[in-house]
Image (cartoon, rainbow, N blue to C red; front, side):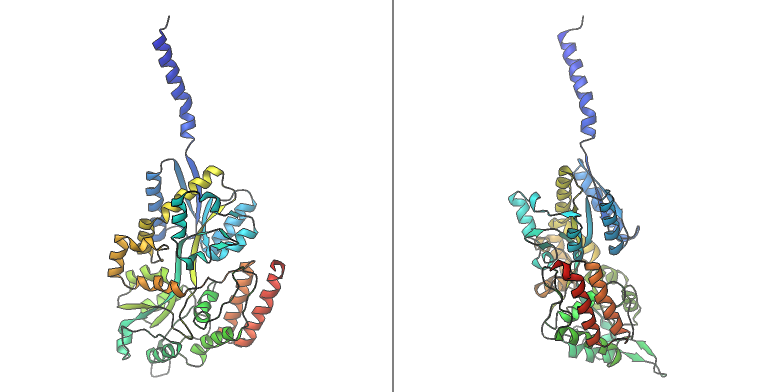
Length: 430
């Protein structure tokens, strides 16, 4: 006959064994879509961050799925949503917010923000980044890999042209003057070095266009994403200036300039100035064999740039437990220390004021003062172009920008065409 103690021990062991499957299954798994092709330095950085998060949070598992370009990623996320297999979390363009809301794919973060600490965390993000993250009084996206457009310039080529290497062109007039002096031709008249390159091809022409319209003191859309103002006189004027850089002043290649080739041309020294994302800062720092500077957008009537980049979005398919786990992960990824290190490793702008107060960020900014340009430009930044039916409306604008840069439409005709078509597409949302 077994003793009471033996029976108690057996019952305790049985209880432990019975509880073991439940404990093993208690780990909350979330899937994260990340917008980059497999491989390369960014994926290694993300993988490293996920690994550290899981070590600190053994009850949460995160699987990062590298889904290709931003355009590929949103398409895959929406396809998965419609098919019932959406990820719980995704980093997609801030401009995808209206599309994701209209599809019923995402939920706001606000119901999860319950503690005072949560609210302080949310309030710490720069307002310029929240402009593409909030609408209708709710927070639909959390800034992560965000940027502004900045001007990179080759200081050595500035010296050769007799220009001050520590002073970038600050106005449109100065930009034309500097780019003219930086453009070189051989004996036959062929250009061997362009003064400036501004990408207009591919998916991001509209974004670079905002780097001209914003300094010209005009917005392209309303905050609700239901109206566009593409045929405003100041918009047409900005489009004409961009066209004139190539066809009148002849300081930039004619036709469209591709997004991906612009940094390559700059690093090769065949372009003395380029406009591109702050997210290229690490690339330029690591690969430029010359001294370079970084400056804000030159002024027409004011300073300014659009913000850009990606937000965290929480998908409707996530269970309550997965939503809590996702918030824990997002808060960890955007914590001051991690946001600072992410900015240092990639060149993206650290998204909160607290990140810039960390010791590592202060040390980095002391060594790389060019990193401060994008942060300081946030004071005059505007929301990136984003509307309902965003992909089609943006394509309309991109197509007409490219029509101007290939000289197949005048700036006036292109912007009137773009506004007419955008108005048609947005009519259901008004």
